[in-house]
Image 1 (cartoon, rainbow, N blue to C red):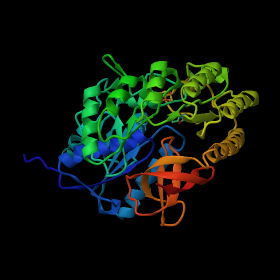
Image 2: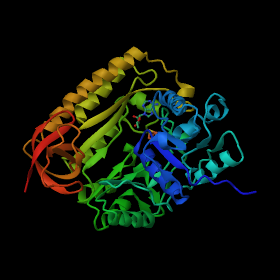
Image 3: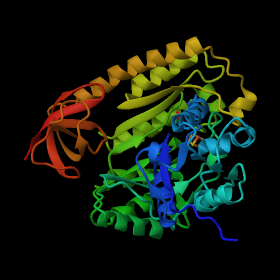
Length: 444
Ligand code: 5AD
Ligand code: SF4
């Protein structure tokens, strides 16, 4: 029997969540383009719609379920194949597979993207209601696939995947499996290729990026080797864990002119009892020591953080401890989240979600206000300085005659558009600052 092939079909893919998911979408594109599928910009033109989902915070599944319904509704009875990819695929596997009201055709977990062409064929050919592969691998890194990237200024590159930390609130170890790293050679080869595609900045990605390890090479080695690639001017990385910053790594970041002077340091809470319940493996004192070590080596290092408010049993006094740390460290910016119970996590099994929603809201509003004042104060210290800016795009903040780019410390800078173009470096003298951006004028 002749096997039906789907490869002349058109695909639309929508992505939620973190940068790793954005990157995975580029991998999915590469895998399916090789199998002769084409990607289109509108779901209305597509034969297949893929949703690359995130499970990390609240409401994710409701949004996706609503989205599936909405896609079918828009098609007005015209058939469309729907595939669920990403972290929600693994996190909600039972419901996705067994819920008959959910009109989806295939499901692929984060380590199964190479099987997508087969999954699509399976659900067409064999009329299997839901074709799926949710196996998590100890080895899959997609190191043999060159992602289909949109041309731009920054290229993401996953250097490791998975997480072994099991923070009690976090679903990632369950949805993405254990840590595994690509070899330095393989990464460097890809970075060289990136430069020939015109990228000047690379962001090294991993769920726990600074625990990168391949044979003898650690994350410091990786940064050094990537920085030797001609044409790469800036190296960023995300997301690290505070526990994995040996002095050798901090020194490598401080000394290497291509390593951007910005470190994201997810604090989560400023209270030792809560940190322990979260299984973060550091104390408030150890976190302060790390911040001190960083500032001793490089006083101007930009630092940002993630905070969770309303973790189970968090008291007012314990929340105040978080405020104290935020005031003392003065992060350049912070992502602040209300705790939301995630299915399958240790916290879900062991700690009732007992902080009232109204209290969570109060705490997030208060912390956001405090952080806004700190961000503004920090941003204003840059007024009068001149920064090298890598131009990203026309500004979304002001008129079309402005451009925006980022400083080495990852701050957005808006300046009047001149003869410059995207992907150029220019020096900008900072003349003004708001909570979220710097404003300035180009100088020679
Ligand atoms: N509830 C709230 N925030 C969470 N994060 C991860 N899991 C949860 C959760 N269950 C936040 C953490 C993490 C960031 C990526 O998302 O702050 O650093
Ligand atoms: Fe989740 Fe913690 Fe791993 Fe980050 S380090 S991905 S928060 S388990």
